Image (cartoon, rainbow, N blue to C red):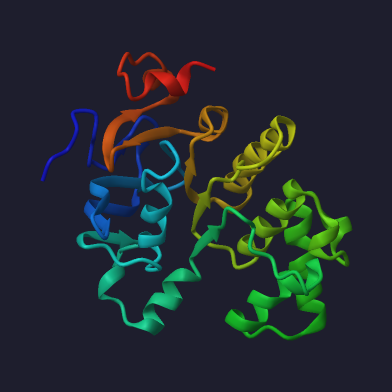
Length: 260
């Protein structure tokens, strides 16, 4: 197994020793003749915001879909919250997914449902909560946490792109996950709205004590949200470290990201 020089697999962190909540080892995935992941490795620490930085089409989204069992890799291992993802039966996998929030790139709201109904849906389906007062309390709190309590009776079509992203995050948070996976959270948003989403990612970590993986090619988002960055280049960890450390690189694959 090959690790880049900057890769570390210990549980020690600059702020002291913290638990590892997710581990990926030597992950490989091809689609036909196209190799997307060529031996990806990572550790995600408790309460950490880890950014996976890379160009579009480099396998970043494939990585997090593998982590929740939506895509099966060709080889390698993934452990999330102490469980080997690909040894779980369907019921065990569903139980694990309740602890891992997935913020989709397109927010994935149901257009035919109000914001309230969108947030009630996972509570009813996954937690079997049907009490009106309990639903109201949970939905209102989740919307307040993303600054959108006033949208509770609106339809998704009435919301801006940034508001849809926020509601999508609220719907994920309502199940109180331990890990958040953000897939291109600022994609398609203007700079001001992007900064609001970046601030929200930091706020979520503080309020919900989540560990997060943030998939992005947006260097501003990487700078604002990351404790640590893994540069995913050509399907492998090219480099790993803080934003400040990576911004000083002269590596031709990474330099273009930092010229902004």
